[in-house]
Length: 557
Ligand code: F6P
Image 1 (cartoon, rainbow, N blue to C red):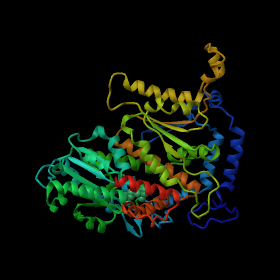
Image 2: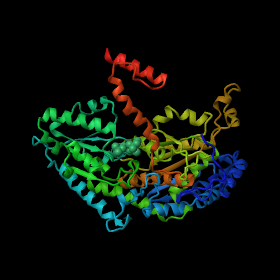
Image 3: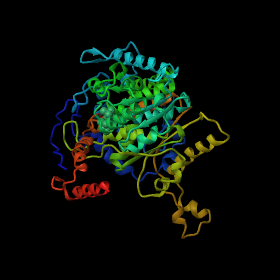
Image 4: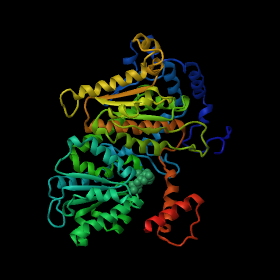
């Protein structure tokens, strides 16, 4: 890696005006970290009886308890200073105003317009794009009503009751996460499936029990060129036409969601059956564009509007609340404190709700594709940590898998716990048991168990060290009353804006993804080599050559 030149001036108009690590707030945070690193959450709570309530924030139906973080009032003050010194507020204004902050692709970043109310105005290249958004939403709603009323008939006259979304990355993770999250509200007479992987097994298993005459495919791809999606879409067409035996069937069994009308048409889908979106919506920020069509079919236009309203309320909170009372800003800065000053490498996101089974997987793309960057907007190599590894799965399953390492391992793993006061499926004591685990885990992580406490329980001297919990392991707890479309929208927007703020402080472009390109290009080169039998044309390194040779010989058997 090239070393940064400390004298270099950022060259981009949206760049932080000076190198991040030389800003006064950064220097002050370094000194503050050195002074307070050893401070235990036990001491912070003991010194301030009101800490648990004082360090909390409520917005858009979400309650954030951030008191179990290794922060003092001084830490927070310095973090807010850092946000101000790095121009977070001006960058936020630039994003909402449609300035082309995605500088490497020369694009505006306007996923917030996807949920802007009808009648508002946001200009892109001098044109108000809000009416375009609502025009597509209305077409989606009309289509959804037909599917839900079973009046959209397949080629043989049978109503469509199976929906298969074909897409990958942002064209899959958002819809699948939100469909699972809102399944409670879904039309249970419809079967929804999601196919993303180029592994043919996924497609074969997804359609195994479906009747082609009752099955609609939604081909979702911003570019309509993605290898995995196109391979699955072609297989879907073959599967469909093999049964329906008429090319005209495509019109009743395929719709597309894309920004690329020409490619949609070339594939054979009538653009009347295409729902568009725009280059100012990034793939991983697109779940509330037409990419959410499968979700709208499942939960209906009304619930979908509630979801958009939740997104919009959080947008407004983020846009207008002062930094100190701004939930995405707060979560971003606390996360950055661990990343950059404690050298924490990961963030575990732990939803205690079965419906949020895909939430961490969704956040992986949102956060890691956005902030997995190593150069600044001005193109200089950073000398600080950027985005963390995001991982996690729903509680309490994780407790019996990986929590041991979080409690007693050697790594600092900040965690976001997510829970609800009311379950959508009351069943005896289950919900109290579930939520007791949320509260117990964050308590145990923060306060641990000292050697003295262990000894006082009469544990033998040789066992005692194994029974000690150091504690001081930081967590956020995010709570809402119950999981509704509005709350889901607010939660997604919360994390979107958190990622934005971190990218703004780190002075990186959170909206491109050049890092996924190289593998794509190399795979396209290798595909034709896999079928060839003659040896000499392999021009890779010796490892890749040997692997391809091995594959060829075993594949042929
Ligand atoms: O993973 C790279 C990526 O470009 C993502 O950003 C995007 O969400 C995904 O591929 C799918 O792209 P498309 O919607 O164009 O098929």
